[in-house]
Image (cartoon, rainbow, N blue to C red; front, side, top):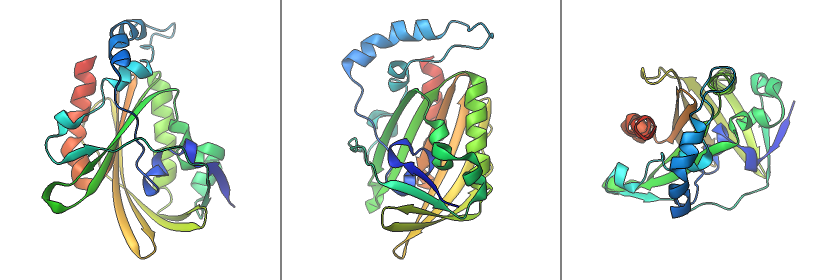
Length: 232
């Protein structure tokens, strides 16, 4: 059975097509952060910390200064509208609709950035995504997507006329934050293979996802989480 969704809502499997980026932090967003953060840290009626605003999340993203030499921020890509079809993965099919390709992680409060690393003559990519919601919603949404994707060791993604074979493997995650998930994805298309590591860490009401070259993810996951927790 085929599940069709638009590329504009892709979350986890978007790395096969392009690592998403967002525009650089604006001065307006920075100036709004203090008041936004104060408003967002009050307790909800359920006793959980209220979500942070997207403006506050923007200031928590890594930048070139955090990463060091050899990194270049990737310009924001225009939204694409080709349909995506997922084949051969009942677990993703059972989620249905947008969730089949990670759309469940499209929380309203979010910030994203992508980098290209050219150090040592090799070009690699890395993206960072930050989401904020109640801890329960972040935990449930992330767990369902990771369980579904790693529950299918092999499946196929069709984007327009491009067919991509995907294999997934659940990985052990470092003991960071309140919850953590990790997986390794291999994308094969046109005789080319790309290996992407994805690690997610929930720290309270913020979810951090770092995707890209396994070496870059391992190198910068701690740094990304430290910037999130320090900013709060």
